[in-house]
Image 1 (cartoon, rainbow, N blue to C red):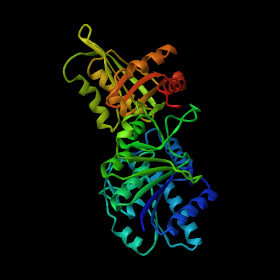
Image 2: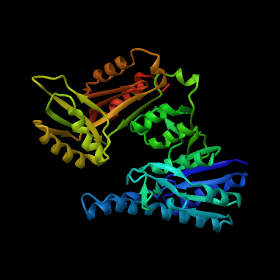
Image 3: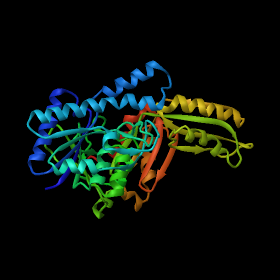
Image 4: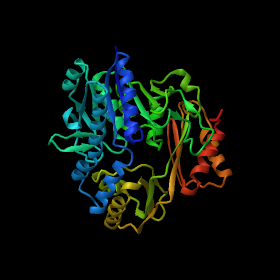
Length: 404
């Protein structure tokens, strides 16, 4: 007997018929002799509807109340799935995040899990109950509902798998694994059978939508094997697991892109120690994530400071940066919403020279100008004009031989 944690996303739970299909899949795994914990997302489109309502009510919704609102979608999903399983003759029980409880900090809309009390769950599992847990949500020390950010159900599933020491965590979605790039952009994209935590972490952080980044962090920290599969077929998917020697033989494993970033530039900033901290600290205090950062060479005692932030936080970030710019006597603040980030990722980049040269030459040959560059040991990211996103992805996928 194994303990299996399964997670089903919004598309898998998108209709009554699809919920029935999920119930049948869960029942099949349970009937094979496994203990079952199932984590589900809100039905597809429901969270977006709730967010739209919040934005209609006010431009900047209160963060605590925002979490109370958007957590409602998962409550519907767990109840419907539990009802369906019970109607099929199975013993099932639904849990909201605070009922587990999944304890988090108080960073509303992007809370981080601090601990999970699994005592009640283990008692129910011993009694043969299939547990249905709301993904995406938890509770802080004050008892307030919190949410883990978009895609947070993946994190919920992996965190529960780690806490319960599950044998495997299966992430069911609308694609049957992790691909070398988005198949909707590149028809030659290939499914990857095995990928390391480190590579998956980079791909997730750079725009790949298959897994949420914090779920990969949990998996890596606690050595949870994560099997990414489709809920619409029985095919084997992609196993996200520990690095091995075969993985290092591949120069580039995947191409990721992100269209949801915005570039902000503070022009003619006084070039003196501490100025970068003055610009970025107010953003950090507002819990806004800054991604790529470029500072130009000083000229006549001033420099330009450019960075990117998520599209969803652009208005708030721009307002904060404009206020900071006045305080430090910068000339002006410019912004560009028509940019995207394109990245290559691979363990093999550690031991191979010339990867960046190959990437830059391929983009230049297509007339694609690079606005910003960021690198790590196993990735290279560039910011380009948004209209060149798909072309850049296809060109890089081809030049690094990922279709073979």
